[in-house]
Structure formats: structure tokens, C-alpha cells
Image 1 (cartoon, rainbow, N blue to C red):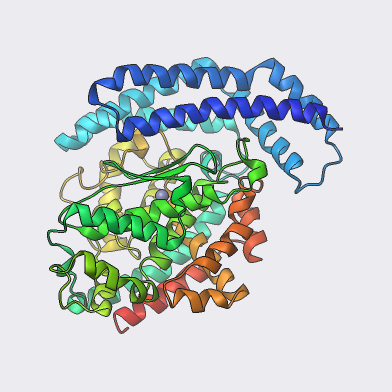
Image 2 (spheres, rainbow, N blue to C red; image 1 turned 90 degrees about the horizontal axis):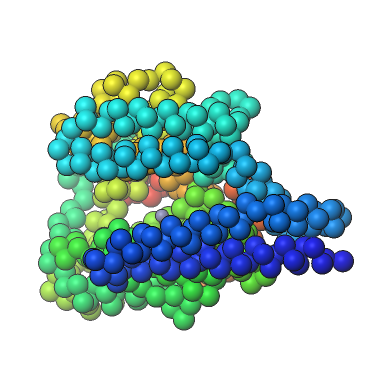
Length: 501
Ligand code: ZN
């Protein structure tokens, strides 16, 4: 008997339909919508979002959920039914925690903070942003208290993006990454001139970049019959269901590899969504399970594959054909070295594979201090500079290039930053497990191919959608809880060889 479950599923799929319609409107806004469409579009999105919210929080849905739970009591833990009900129950109960008054107040705080952030960043005016950031911290603390936690307040915020992950566990793992990375960066700094990447900063025609991005996405397994590639200011990917998952990229005429690596990154995100089991499509668990696991898939294809020598030994010839002038006389080894140059810098989004995590660890540590009340917003710029000095050996001269550079805190999105580094760590752990379990993967990677690797990811990660929380998915796929070891091993080997350490 699954009558109630089926009825519930139909309702949930209808809600997903509305949410996906919002996603289409959103994608269109970022890609092809004329500038003057913004007011109408904002209204359409808000109307549809409200409809979806009303449908999900209705008593009717609550009753159906209870009836379906009763009916599916015997369903096995890892069945689609039990997994779906667990997930929906959690979300349904959580919706009830936040009163409409709180939701409205939070959106007022973050709305004002977002506008202030954009203006203050331009003017390098931390003092102007400060009261907004204070309000943003306060609303996040309030949300954490409402949500509840066992050990520390930050747990409640982290759980929203990385369900099931504890702050203490992240802290332990990040401390290990930090302890291993800081000396590595210092050693590399002493060999500053070892890598010449000047060939990357030339005039690269956008038309050839476009062709190359499509080639790169296809080369790692992104399925263009179930997606497409559009041009935007800030690259992202979006799913309307497993058969329509779109990617975007940004073209900088003077720096060809940024569009290429952005495309590989978004392809990784998109292949995750394209690989979700058909049975879960259109349901609430037919999506990636956490921000960290999602990021692991993008980082895996951007860095572990896209910045590997094997990949370019197979594909550099094609790149050279598209940019014959720019890459004349450049060897594949020279190119490989250039795309892996390590350079401590001020801006997170421009950081290389090795220094990137230090930007995240800095934010993670500051966020916790803010949320616990150990650090005042007024003291944040100073704390920022101090940590930059310790972790990267560089210090911003302005707050615009320091504490004001990211949008996240203005959105009260505390707890999001660590998922970027969690993604890097998961990607190394998945990669190590995949290579160990299937020796064909190494052979293929050395030839620039990812067929078996993608098959492993489909089987062990993608198809499950969000049936399992990140920590459980990691255990099931790799046999271990998340650890810093595979990532540390990977960067030591890779950068040790690149810089002859
Ligand atoms: Zn990403």
C-alpha cells in the first residue's frame, strides 16, 4: 500500500514544478532578459515563490505527510520512500520554527545590508557598513537560537548548508589543512620565480574561447543534449530537472583560462544534477545533498581533472589550435605549470588551488568569533588583516580588498564559507577512493578521459541525490569520514613536484 505516499509525492512534485519555474525565470534574468525586465521579473519570482511556500506549509500537506509516514513505517532506511519522508519531515518542521514576522524582519535586514554592502565596498567605507553587519550578525544569532543546537551556536548555521556536519569536526579538519598548507605556501614563496604564467595574460578572442569552453565541458562528460552553455557576469549552474541542467561562463578577453576553468567548474556542478537517479527527478530529494558535496563535484573537474598534466597532454593540442598565435612555442608542461602557479593574494575568488583554502579558513574562524560574540564587528577589519598576515603573508591596504570583498555576510549567510573548502577536501577524498577502487580511472586520466571516473561518481555520489546527508554519503562512497589527509597528500605531491620542494 502506498496510496498516501503517492498522493504526497504528487503534491511535492507540483511544488517542485513551481520552484523550477522560478529557477527558469531566474536563469533567464541572469542570461538573456532585457535590462528593463527587472521590475516585472522580481514580482513574478516573488509571486511564484510565495505560492510554493504556501503549498509546502499547508495543513493539507502536513496531514498527507503524517499519513504517508504511518503507511511507510516499514520502509527500509535507504529506500527512496524512507529517505524522502525523512527529508520532507525535517524541512516541514523547520518551516514551522520561523514565524512570518521573523522571516520578514530577516529579509529587511539582509535587503538593507546587501544594498549598503554594494555601496560601501565601492567607497571603501567599512564604518558605513558596520551597523548593517551588526544587524546581520544579530539576525543570524537569533536564527541559530530558533533553529536550536547541542554544542555551539555556529552548528545551527552550518547545518543549513552542510546538514549533519558539526563545527568541531570542521575546525579539527581545517586546523590540519592549515598546519600543512601554511609552511607549503611559505616554501613556495621562496621560489617565486619558478613558474612563468605570462602567456596566460594575452588577448584571446572570445569566439575561440566559446568553442573551447564547449569542448572542455564535453570532454569531461557534461551532456549538452540535457543542457546548454550561456554567458553571464557571475558564472553559475542551475537545474530544472535531471534532463535540463544549464551551465554558464564569463569571458575575459585578456585571460582565456578563466572562462575555461569556470566552465569546467560549472560542468562539475551540472553533471552532479544530470546524474541523479530518474526515480528522484522532480522530487524534493532530486538534487545535490549539500553545498560542500556540490562544490566537491565542481572542484573535482575544475582542479583534480582540469588542472592535471594528463588532461592537458591529451587536450592542449586543441587549445593551441584555437589560439595559434598566443600559444605558439608553448609546451604542454609550460602551460600546465602556468595554470598551477601559486601566488598568495588578497582576493578569494582569484586565489589558486592551494592558497584558496586559507581565505576560507580565515572567514570560518572570524565567523565563529562573530557568532559566539568573541569578536565585535568594529574589530573585524583589524582581525582580518592579522589573519591574512599569518595565513598568507599579505595584507590588504583597503577594506574593499579585505573584509568588504564578499557578499555573503551581508546576506547573513554565516556558515556558508566553510563549504567551499569542505568541497575541496571531499573532492580529494572521492578522487582517492575512486582511483583505488577502479584502476582504469588512472589509465584514463593519463589520457585526458573521465568516462570511468564519471561512472564511479554517478554510482557512488550523483544518483543518490539528497537521500543521505554529506557525512553519511562520504562514508558510503569512500568508507571513511571526511579527513584532511587525501587533500594534503594531493597538494604535497602536486605542488612539491611543480616547485621542486
Ligand atoms: Zn561552485
